[in-house]
Length: 124
Image (cartoon, rainbow, N blue to C red):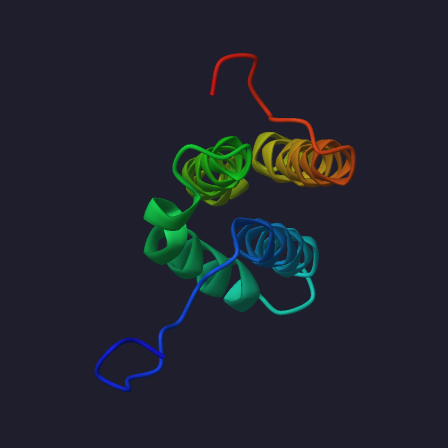
């Protein structure tokens, strides 16, 4: 309570960081299941990532958010290219297959780095 009788909320930094860590795990999980949801969970993850980006600034989670956001947009770009190349039969399907493998790699690598409390980039 302050001198006027109002409740004072004190945010513990370790609690804030634990919450950001939990959120980052949730975002990786949303990206991991995007194949099963037709991309809906990836849309949710990208929106949350942009909304919460300022909250992670200056923490190791900032690099994870950047990694996730970049992964999403590269996936969209190559997904569109792959779909446009489907009439060229093998090329379009090969692009989409490679994109799926690449996205899986990005999710797994990011999640493993998060689990080890490591940033995604040497200089976040």
